[in-house]
Amino acid sequence: QEDESDIVVVEGIQPNVDEAIRDIEVILPGLVERLKDDGEISQNANTTSESPGRLENLPIIDLNAKNITEALFFPNPQNYTRLLRYLGAVEKSLDVCMFTITDNLLTDEILKAHRKGLSVRVITDDERSVDRGSDIGDIKTSGVVVRMDASKTHMHHKFAIIDKKILLTGSFNWTRAASVENQENIIITNSPALVEPFIAEFEKLWTNFALNS
Image 1 (cartoon, helix red, strand yellow):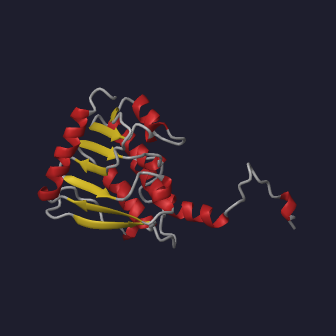
Image 2 (cartoon, rainbow, N blue to C red):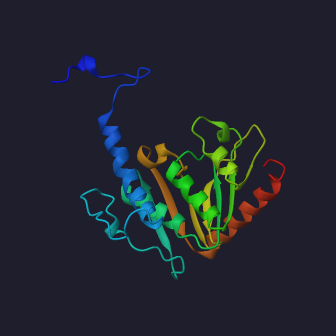
Image 3 (tube, helix red, strand yellow):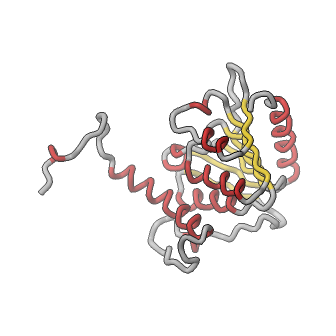
């Protein structure tokens, strides 16, 4: 029988089994889907566990659907996987305007779109870009063009535009905390009345921040 004194504590951090399980429940469905997309595992691999992120229960992403209107709330494994699927379905371009990016799986979708030769642009906050755990350095190193503000105020937007026709926006930062801990939301829509103003805002910031790449 394991004695409590045998449990290793690193830098004063106690093991948190509940948190670890929650992380696995959120991240694993998206990871499995990504491995399928990359051909690392069979498309027929069994993913029908009792996890709330069961992939077979999620509708297929159709970027050309006539009406796209979704509300995703977090933390929720199915919604996290749904978000990854939208990003993985990009066909032409991905414009990301995000206060902070630290979630590695979401970052992987940015990099995957770039490796496919798609147009990928990222706008972020200059201060958050150098935070511990920020993925901005890796994104820039990969060749994705990143622009940011250079002011005492923040570039605090949280939205992305897929193929110039689908908007993802809400409180959700692309961080692990947003994925597995915080109460967050994302609205997904292809309504031109909403998409077009966000495209205009992205282009305005892209121009304004041209010197801050």
